[in-house]
Image (tube, rainbow, N blue to C red; front, side, top):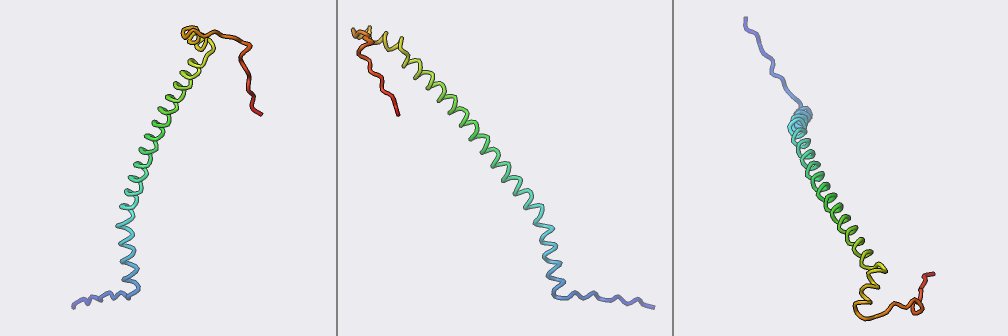
Length: 98
């Protein structure tokens, strides 16, 4: 006796469902790797920007300290003496902001 094999017939809707399921199984790992690579690239860019910001803040602090040093009363009086000017407290006018 011969065993007869039944041919499995898929409906058109089943074929479409199987196709999309296989497509999903193939594309899922690819999309995960792509999204992780994008996240890593974004994190690297973020760290570079944070480093630039830190460096700029340090430069700004250094410049502010230099401004304070150059604007000190002793420094101004010393420059005035070198230029032959005299310091007269009565000639100083104070301007206040309201």
